[in-house]
Length: 275
Image 1 (cartoon, rainbow, N blue to C red):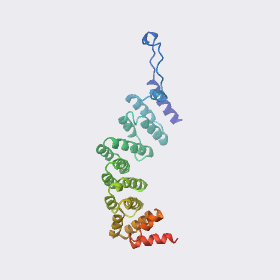
Image 2 (image 1 turned 135 degrees about the vertical axis):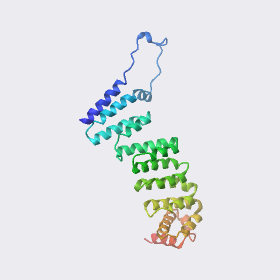
Image 3 (image 1 turned 45 degrees about the horizontal axis):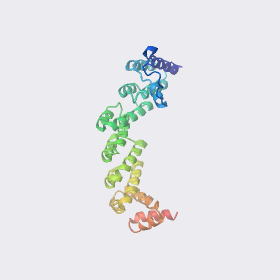
Image 4 (image 1 turned 180 degrees about the vertical axis):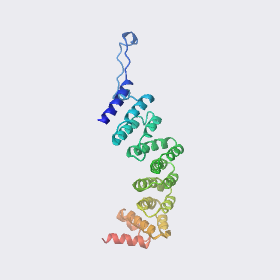
Protein backbone atom coordinates (compact mmCIF):
# COMPACT_ATOMS: atom_id res chain seq x y z
CA UNK A 1 0.00 0.00 0.00
CA UNK A 2 2.77 2.41 0.96
CA UNK A 3 4.70 1.66 -2.22
CA UNK A 4 1.54 2.31 -4.30
CA UNK A 5 1.18 5.64 -2.47
CA UNK A 6 4.78 6.55 -3.41
CA UNK A 7 4.29 5.54 -7.04
CA UNK A 8 1.00 7.50 -7.20
CA UNK A 9 2.82 10.59 -5.89
CA UNK A 10 5.50 10.14 -8.51
CA UNK A 11 2.84 9.65 -11.20
CA UNK A 12 1.07 12.86 -10.26
CA UNK A 13 4.30 14.84 -10.56
CA UNK A 14 5.07 13.27 -13.96
CA UNK A 15 1.54 13.98 -15.19
CA UNK A 16 1.82 17.62 -14.15
CA UNK A 17 4.95 17.95 -16.28
CA UNK A 18 3.44 16.26 -19.35
CA UNK A 19 0.62 18.61 -20.38
CA UNK A 20 0.41 18.81 -24.16
CA UNK A 21 -0.04 22.22 -25.84
CA UNK A 22 -3.35 22.89 -27.63
CA UNK A 23 -3.11 24.19 -31.19
CA UNK A 24 -5.86 26.23 -32.84
CA UNK A 25 -6.71 26.09 -36.52
CA UNK A 26 -5.25 29.55 -36.93
CA UNK A 27 -1.87 28.31 -35.80
CA UNK A 28 -1.65 25.73 -38.59
CA UNK A 29 1.27 26.15 -40.95
CA UNK A 30 0.75 27.19 -44.57
CA UNK A 31 1.63 23.65 -45.61
CA UNK A 32 -0.93 22.01 -43.31
CA UNK A 33 -2.54 20.18 -46.22
CA UNK A 34 0.60 18.17 -46.93
CA UNK A 35 1.13 14.77 -45.33
CA UNK A 36 3.29 15.00 -42.17
CA UNK A 37 6.38 12.81 -41.94
CA UNK A 38 5.94 9.40 -40.37
CA UNK A 39 6.81 9.15 -36.68
CA UNK A 40 8.88 6.11 -35.79
CA UNK A 41 8.44 3.96 -32.70
CA UNK A 42 11.75 5.22 -31.33
CA UNK A 43 10.68 8.84 -31.79
CA UNK A 44 7.38 8.19 -30.02
CA UNK A 45 9.21 6.54 -27.10
CA UNK A 46 11.49 9.54 -26.74
CA UNK A 47 8.58 11.95 -26.91
CA UNK A 48 6.58 10.01 -24.32
CA UNK A 49 9.45 9.75 -21.81
CA UNK A 50 9.25 12.59 -19.33
CA UNK A 51 12.15 13.64 -17.16
CA UNK A 52 11.15 15.40 -13.96
CA UNK A 53 12.31 18.92 -13.36
CA UNK A 54 14.74 19.42 -10.49
CA UNK A 55 11.97 20.78 -8.26
CA UNK A 56 9.51 17.99 -9.10
CA UNK A 57 12.16 15.33 -8.59
CA UNK A 58 13.00 16.60 -5.11
CA UNK A 59 9.31 16.69 -4.22
CA UNK A 60 8.91 13.12 -5.44
CA UNK A 61 11.99 12.09 -3.49
CA UNK A 62 10.60 13.63 -0.32
CA UNK A 63 7.37 11.66 -0.78
CA UNK A 64 9.23 8.39 -1.33
CA UNK A 65 11.41 8.95 1.73
CA UNK A 66 8.28 8.85 3.87
CA UNK A 67 7.57 5.23 2.95
CA UNK A 68 7.85 3.29 6.24
CA UNK A 69 9.23 0.04 4.79
CA UNK A 70 13.00 0.14 4.22
CA UNK A 71 12.83 -2.35 1.35
CA UNK A 72 10.07 -0.45 -0.47
CA UNK A 73 11.68 2.92 0.20
CA UNK A 74 15.08 1.84 -1.10
CA UNK A 75 13.59 0.21 -4.20
CA UNK A 76 11.49 3.27 -5.03
CA UNK A 77 14.36 5.74 -4.53
CA UNK A 78 16.73 3.56 -6.58
CA UNK A 79 14.15 3.42 -9.38
CA UNK A 80 13.96 7.22 -9.36
CA UNK A 81 17.76 7.44 -9.62
CA UNK A 82 17.86 4.99 -12.54
CA UNK A 83 15.18 7.01 -14.36
CA UNK A 84 17.53 10.01 -14.40
CA UNK A 85 20.89 8.22 -14.63
CA UNK A 86 21.49 9.28 -18.23
CA UNK A 87 19.47 12.48 -18.71
CA UNK A 88 20.53 14.25 -15.51
CA UNK A 89 23.42 12.45 -13.87
CA UNK A 90 24.00 15.05 -11.15
CA UNK A 91 20.41 14.78 -9.96
CA UNK A 92 20.58 10.99 -10.14
CA UNK A 93 23.67 11.05 -7.95
CA UNK A 94 21.86 13.28 -5.48
CA UNK A 95 19.00 10.78 -5.36
CA UNK A 96 21.43 7.89 -4.99
CA UNK A 97 22.98 9.64 -2.02
CA UNK A 98 19.69 9.22 -0.12
CA UNK A 99 20.08 5.44 -0.24
CA UNK A 100 21.55 3.61 2.74
CA UNK A 101 25.28 2.86 2.54
CA UNK A 102 26.29 -0.64 1.41
CA UNK A 103 22.77 -1.52 0.25
CA UNK A 104 22.51 -3.56 -3.00
CA UNK A 105 20.44 -0.87 -4.71
CA UNK A 106 23.10 1.76 -4.01
CA UNK A 107 25.98 -0.50 -4.99
CA UNK A 108 24.45 -1.25 -8.39
CA UNK A 109 24.14 2.47 -9.08
CA UNK A 110 27.75 3.01 -7.99
CA UNK A 111 28.90 0.35 -10.46
CA UNK A 112 26.97 2.06 -13.25
CA UNK A 113 28.25 5.57 -12.53
CA UNK A 114 31.84 4.36 -12.04
CA UNK A 115 31.84 2.84 -15.54
CA UNK A 116 30.26 5.93 -17.12
CA UNK A 117 32.65 8.35 -15.41
CA UNK A 118 35.65 6.20 -16.33
CA UNK A 119 34.63 6.22 -19.99
CA UNK A 120 34.75 10.03 -19.92
CA UNK A 121 37.69 10.87 -17.62
CA UNK A 122 39.62 8.20 -15.72
CA UNK A 123 41.36 10.58 -13.31
CA UNK A 124 38.15 12.34 -12.31
CA UNK A 125 36.41 8.98 -11.97
CA UNK A 126 39.05 7.83 -9.48
CA UNK A 127 38.66 11.03 -7.45
CA UNK A 128 34.89 10.51 -7.38
CA UNK A 129 35.29 6.88 -6.32
CA UNK A 130 37.64 7.72 -3.46
CA UNK A 131 35.03 10.15 -2.13
CA UNK A 132 32.35 7.51 -1.60
CA UNK A 133 31.03 6.75 1.87
CA UNK A 134 32.56 3.39 2.78
CA UNK A 135 35.65 1.28 1.96
CA UNK A 136 33.38 -1.31 0.36
CA UNK A 137 31.83 1.25 -1.98
CA UNK A 138 35.22 2.68 -2.87
CA UNK A 139 36.54 -0.76 -3.80
CA UNK A 140 33.43 -1.49 -5.89
CA UNK A 141 33.85 1.74 -7.83
CA UNK A 142 37.61 1.37 -8.32
CA UNK A 143 37.07 -2.18 -9.51
CA UNK A 144 34.70 -1.01 -12.25
CA UNK A 145 37.00 1.85 -13.20
CA UNK A 146 39.91 -0.58 -13.50
CA UNK A 147 37.98 -2.63 -16.07
CA UNK A 148 37.55 0.43 -18.28
CA UNK A 149 41.18 1.41 -17.74
CA UNK A 150 42.40 -2.07 -18.69
CA UNK A 151 41.41 -1.51 -22.31
CA UNK A 152 44.08 1.18 -22.75
CA UNK A 153 46.42 0.88 -19.75
CA UNK A 154 46.23 -2.61 -18.20
CA UNK A 155 49.36 -2.07 -16.10
CA UNK A 156 47.80 0.95 -14.37
CA UNK A 157 44.51 -0.94 -14.01
CA UNK A 158 46.32 -3.79 -12.29
CA UNK A 159 47.90 -1.49 -9.76
CA UNK A 160 44.58 0.28 -9.19
CA UNK A 161 42.76 -2.89 -8.16
CA UNK A 162 45.74 -3.98 -6.07
CA UNK A 163 45.27 -0.78 -4.05
CA UNK A 164 41.47 -0.85 -4.11
CA UNK A 165 40.90 -3.31 -1.29
CA UNK A 166 38.67 -5.45 -3.48
CA UNK A 167 38.06 -8.98 -2.21
CA UNK A 168 36.29 -12.15 -3.17
CA UNK A 169 34.71 -12.96 -6.49
CA UNK A 170 34.63 -9.34 -7.67
CA UNK A 171 38.42 -9.12 -7.34
CA UNK A 172 38.87 -12.50 -9.08
CA UNK A 173 36.75 -11.41 -12.05
CA UNK A 174 38.59 -8.08 -12.35
CA UNK A 175 41.97 -9.82 -12.23
CA UNK A 176 41.11 -12.20 -15.06
CA UNK A 177 39.70 -9.45 -17.26
CA UNK A 178 42.75 -7.24 -16.75
CA UNK A 179 45.13 -10.12 -17.38
CA UNK A 180 43.37 -10.98 -20.63
CA UNK A 181 44.34 -7.54 -21.92
CA UNK A 182 47.72 -7.13 -20.23
CA UNK A 183 49.16 -10.57 -20.97
CA UNK A 184 48.40 -10.10 -24.66
CA UNK A 185 50.70 -7.04 -24.61
CA UNK A 186 53.33 -7.94 -22.01
CA UNK A 187 53.02 -11.41 -20.44
CA UNK A 188 56.27 -11.07 -18.48
CA UNK A 189 55.02 -7.98 -16.64
CA UNK A 190 51.67 -9.65 -16.05
CA UNK A 191 53.31 -12.73 -14.58
CA UNK A 192 55.46 -10.57 -12.29
CA UNK A 193 52.30 -8.85 -11.00
CA UNK A 194 50.40 -12.08 -10.40
CA UNK A 195 53.46 -13.48 -8.65
CA UNK A 196 52.94 -10.91 -5.88
CA UNK A 197 49.52 -12.31 -4.93
CA UNK A 198 48.97 -14.37 -1.84
CA UNK A 199 47.84 -17.97 -2.52
CA UNK A 200 44.24 -17.55 -3.67
CA UNK A 201 41.72 -18.25 -6.37
CA UNK A 202 42.72 -14.98 -8.01
CA UNK A 203 46.39 -16.01 -8.19
CA UNK A 204 45.58 -19.43 -9.60
CA UNK A 205 43.25 -17.97 -12.22
CA UNK A 206 45.74 -15.22 -13.01
CA UNK A 207 48.60 -17.66 -13.60
CA UNK A 208 46.42 -19.86 -15.79
CA UNK A 209 45.31 -16.93 -17.90
CA UNK A 210 48.82 -15.48 -18.20
CA UNK A 211 50.51 -18.73 -19.17
CA UNK A 212 47.81 -19.71 -21.64
CA UNK A 213 48.50 -16.48 -23.55
CA UNK A 214 52.26 -16.42 -23.00
CA UNK A 215 52.79 -20.01 -24.14
CA UNK A 216 51.18 -19.23 -27.50
CA UNK A 217 53.58 -16.37 -28.28
CA UNK A 218 56.80 -17.39 -26.49
CA UNK A 219 56.56 -20.81 -24.88
CA UNK A 220 60.25 -21.00 -23.97
CA UNK A 221 60.08 -17.70 -22.07
CA UNK A 222 57.01 -18.95 -20.20
CA UNK A 223 58.82 -22.13 -19.20
CA UNK A 224 61.90 -20.13 -18.17
CA UNK A 225 59.70 -18.06 -15.85
CA UNK A 226 58.31 -21.21 -14.25
CA UNK A 227 61.86 -22.52 -13.72
CA UNK A 228 62.81 -19.28 -11.96
CA UNK A 229 60.09 -19.61 -9.31
CA UNK A 230 61.37 -20.48 -5.85
CA UNK A 231 58.05 -20.35 -4.00
CA UNK A 232 56.79 -23.94 -3.89
CA UNK A 233 53.05 -23.19 -4.02
CA UNK A 234 53.48 -20.65 -6.82
CA UNK A 235 55.59 -23.07 -8.84
CA UNK A 236 52.95 -25.75 -8.34
CA UNK A 237 50.22 -23.44 -9.64
CA UNK A 238 52.34 -22.53 -12.66
CA UNK A 239 53.23 -26.17 -13.35
CA UNK A 240 49.58 -27.20 -13.33
CA UNK A 241 48.61 -24.23 -15.50
CA UNK A 242 51.26 -25.09 -18.08
CA UNK A 243 50.19 -28.74 -18.10
CA UNK A 244 46.60 -27.58 -18.63
CA UNK A 245 47.67 -25.52 -21.62
CA UNK A 246 49.70 -28.28 -23.26
CA UNK A 247 47.03 -30.96 -22.79
CA UNK A 248 44.47 -28.64 -24.37
CA UNK A 249 46.49 -28.57 -27.62
CA UNK A 250 46.14 -30.98 -30.57
CA UNK A 251 48.13 -34.19 -30.23
CA UNK A 252 50.75 -33.09 -32.74
CA UNK A 253 51.35 -29.84 -30.84
CA UNK A 254 51.65 -31.73 -27.54
CA UNK A 255 54.49 -33.80 -28.98
CA UNK A 256 56.33 -30.62 -29.97
CA UNK A 257 56.48 -29.65 -26.27
CA UNK A 258 58.29 -32.85 -25.32
CA UNK A 259 61.65 -32.07 -23.68
CA UNK A 260 60.99 -28.32 -23.70
CA UNK A 261 59.35 -27.92 -20.30
CA UNK A 262 60.42 -28.98 -16.79
CA UNK A 263 60.47 -32.39 -15.10
CA UNK A 264 57.54 -31.29 -12.92
CA UNK A 265 55.43 -30.28 -15.93
CA UNK A 266 56.23 -33.52 -17.77
CA UNK A 267 55.37 -35.53 -14.64
CA UNK A 268 52.07 -33.62 -14.26
CA UNK A 269 51.14 -34.33 -17.88
CA UNK A 270 52.06 -38.01 -17.56
CA UNK A 271 50.07 -38.47 -14.37
CA UNK A 272 46.96 -37.03 -15.97
CA UNK A 273 47.33 -39.12 -19.12
CA UNK A 274 47.55 -42.28 -17.00
CA UNK A 275 44.33 -41.57 -15.12
